[in-house]
Length: 43
Image 1 (cartoon, rainbow, N blue to C red):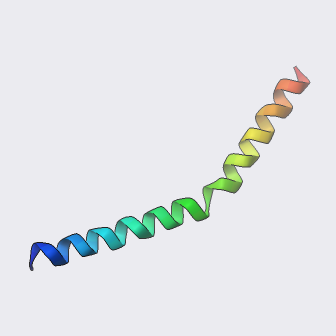
Image 2: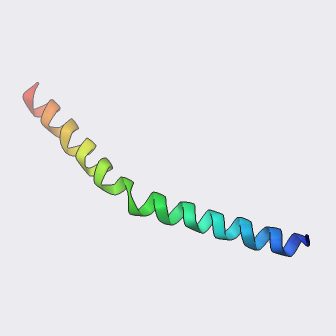
């Protein structure tokens, strides 16, 4: 195995992880922010 193949595989994994992270959490983050605002307002 050459290091170049290793690097390209690592890049593919990194890109996949970034895409997954970017595609899923925003909704949860927004919900948390809204929830926090509601808690502050109720106090």
